[in-house]
Each structure stands twice: as structure tokens, then as C-alpha cells.
Image (cartoon, rainbow, N blue to C red; front, side, top):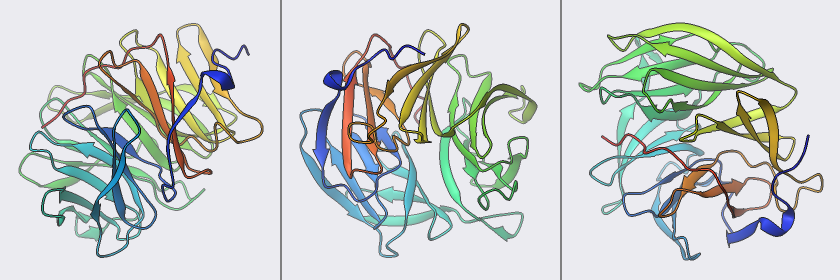
Amino acid sequence: MTVKYKHSDIKILASGIDHSEGLCVGLKGEIYLGSESGKIYCLTLDGKLDVVAQSAASGILLGLSIRSNGNLIVCDAAAKTVWEVNLESNTWEVFCDSVGGAPLNLPNWGCFLTDGSYVFSDSGGWKESEGKIIRVDTNGKSSIWSQGCPDFTNGMALSEDGQFLYVVESTPGKLSSIAINKDYSAGDTKILLQMDAVPDGVTVTTSGALVISCYRPDVIYLWDKAGLSVLAEDREGTYLAAPTNTVLAGPDRNLLIWPNFGRWDVARIETDLKGIELLIY
């Protein structure tokens, strides 16, 4: 496969971030990142980095989503809880910690559906094929939404038209789509791609192409109707080091930004892609 972007195209935005996996774009274009020590960082596009919240439980923070009130929805793998975090007061309220009376296993990544409900992956044990997707409705009630992607259910993203949820499973690596029914229940699951990799995150572009970031190998892929191609790779794990998740940010939503889980830094590429407008509730 042809590599689209070279090492010289990659810029390091900030360093010293404790094993960040998840990130999201804030209301003013800033970037929020979680860490293994329960910290939430705020990063500006000019590289200014600050700690803006700290979990008292010192959780392992994975997926983050911004709300219209500026709060963050945060998946915490250590506390087995999805939090709603008020950044101004550093207040952590439980958003979801159980489903059907059973505690969560490994809350990993989430996003909003067009009715304002929130879906997130509960990955389960590594290679245990017990992952599921949980939905929290606008009244705060949780339920199992889908068990159609059980192989360490990981990153997900809503399609531009809101009719499908794209989901990556990490082991074995797969990209699937789940149809969203009119009542917002889960429809059919369709495997779109089998991958000889450990995909972690997926990001939707306005062209319909998907950016797929991988824990292993150190590669960011682009998948579209033409198939799978390499956006960037690093066999030495220096500029790309376990690029777990990506966002498309900036005024034109063309800056591809990701945390290098293996290097404690955040990197970016200016691309010819454009990110879709994310749903915020």
C-alpha cells in the first residue's frame, strides 16, 4: 500500500501526557484527552497543554465526548463507570455504571445518536468475545443496545446521515456497521472489513471515508469504496506509536490529531480530509 503522509508531515503538538488513548474536540475547538492516571488534559491547537480535571479514583480514562453544556462524558475502565465531568468544578457524577442490574465490565468509547441518547462500548475481556454496546437514553436509563460486535468492542462513530453506527473490534480486527432503526434500536450488523491489525478507533469524514487508527501496528488507515489504504505508518514507532484514536479538528476540520499511546505525546497532520459535524447534546 502507498503511504499518503510521510514522517515530515507529522508535527508533535504536546508531550508528557500519561498514556492517553481517548480524545475529543471541545466547544471552542480545543482538544480534551484522558490519561491512565485519571487526569483530563486540555490542549489548544497551538500546543498549550493544561490539566483541567483529576479523578479522585485515579481511573483509566478512555473515550471522551463533549456535551452542549461543556461537560465531558468519560469512559473509565478502572472504575468501570461512565462519568459526566463538570470541568469548572472538577465534579464527577455517575452517568452509567450498570446495565440490567449488572456492573459494567470495561467501558471504552461512546458517541451520541441523533435522538440525544448515548451509546458506548463495554469491551469485555481481551479475546473473551463478550463485548457489547450499551445505550443510555435521554432519561438516563441504560440497556444493552447490541451484542453484534463482541470481539473486544472498541471505537465507534456515527455515520454522517445518522443511519449507521460504525464499530471496530480489536481482536480479531474488524470494522462493522450497525443499522439504526427508526425507534433507535439496533438493526442488522454488517462486517465491512476484516483486518490483520488491532484497530482501536474510527473517525468519519464528509466524503464517507473512514479513518481507522490502530493500537498495533503503528498505522493509521483510510477505508473507502476503493478499499483500505495507509494514511501514515511508522515501523520504528516514533512519530506514530500506538495511535489509538483520532479526531479531525481545526477551523476547516482537516487537522488529523491523535495521541501516541506509546510515546506520551500528541501529534497532528494537515490533511485533505474533512471531519463531519459531531452531534452534541
